[in-house]
Image 1: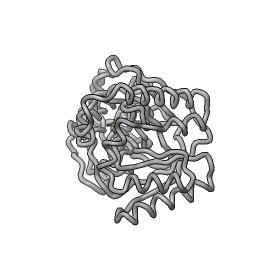
Image 2 (image 1 turned 135 degrees about the vertical axis):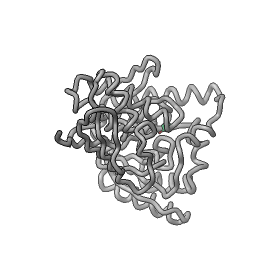
Image 3 (image 1 turned 90 degrees about the horizontal axis):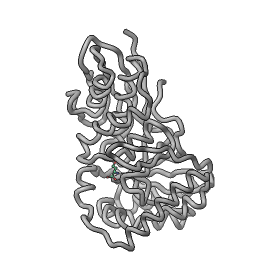
Length: 306
Ligand code: HSE
């Protein structure tokens, strides 16, 4: 049986105040999985990655998602997966979700694409739950569908694609710090003040409106999070200095990508983007933190065959 090659993009999830609900797929980075049919079961060949990941299909998000999809398809046949990680572990760029989405997509494609991308969100999210300790689709949904998504409800899962902002340029900076989602969730407050809840809710709603209206300015001024960012920024050495540097260099906002430590700033101006990127990298460097950076935009396609 011939191999197919699937690409699943990186994601920013959550986007600022939209904790666990708002996510966005971004261009350029992602995981690639080659897959082929086998007689039965799910098998993972040695993984191409800079860090160790389990080969056991029941412990690997790609494997778990593929197993779930084969169950949904009631397939007797199996799948072999060759995983090439393009996303760093514990980076806040949806690494485990990308593998899960690619695994789910590959299994479905090999057995006739009977499920829609929307159908694949549930198995991919279940797979991510195993490694993250939480059930949220703000990485898996945009990764599969592309663009920006909003989760209305997890049980039953109800996710909506919410549009595009053509002018949005995203400066992504990933410091050389590992933050595991499980740990970044464990430090979050159990209760929040009503005024903070109202503020975050309003900003989340307006980010959604901004995507629906293709309104960059509304998006940029709604990128404010007074609940999660103040707690999680403590895990990111230099966060305040980097944010100040980004804003001084012309960014219209900066916050944490997902559980961190990746941060992202936004602009609608290409030449400003390079200046902002340099200011953020220099600020991390002054704090003694090495980092990788890139300028990108939304990935409207999501998980796909290469
Ligand atoms: N919404 C999740 C969180 C995403 O912020 O904990 C983690 O990738």
